[in-house]
Amino acid sequence: MKVRGVLLVLSGPSGAGKGTICQALLKSRPDMCYSVSATTRQPRAGEKDGVNYFFISKDRFEEMIQNDELLEYASVYGNYYGTPRQYVEEKLSQGCDVVLEIDPQGAMQIKKKFPEGVFVFVVPPSPEELSDRIHKRGTDSQEVIDKRLSAAAAELACASKYDYLVVNDQVDVATAKVSAIITAEKNRVARNCDLIDKVCQSFLLAQKEEQHG
Image 1: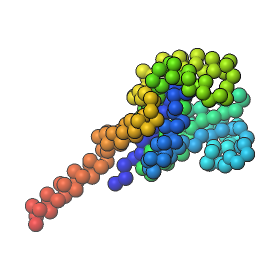
Image 2: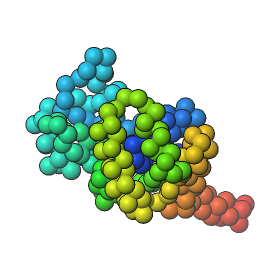
Image 3: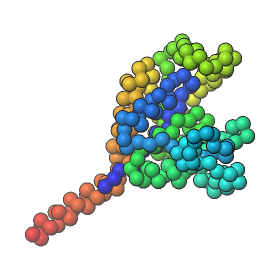
Image 4: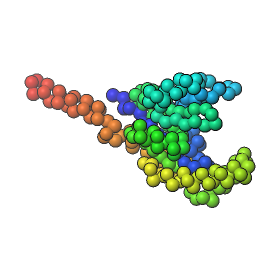
């Protein structure tokens, strides 16, 4: 019997290394896939519908909001972004683990609608390391960097609302920890009730056949 997949929700401040951990997980766990979001913005060059995003109209997105078809959503610079419930449910039912990298606000929306998800907060080993990582990117102005560091402090205050905390000192070690969390969660008794029932029924059937044999 195929065990239902696990929804992994990964959050953390900018510079914590969430994206790197996600990519490493996808490479090391063939049974894992990335959650595809829906958006109302226009596709950029090279983007494919159903791969990078589900590109839909504003009317359709608002219909999805009304019908509770989204695990979370937000409006960013005039466009909607959200996580379709159906896509996640289909992948989980196929036994595929789904990873979703998202900010704490979106994660808490998901936790209300999908409490059986596994919520992991990734942090750097120190504030100094976080600042150093953001500066080393070399892609942001000092003003943007200051905003990211300020936002990081607010996001770190949300860590207590998550199930697990992983310090990303070394990417391979942090990835191994997150992978171990997923493996442990997949073996929770609460996630394997159907399997337990099937084993028990098989055991009882075997006993009856032995008694009447």
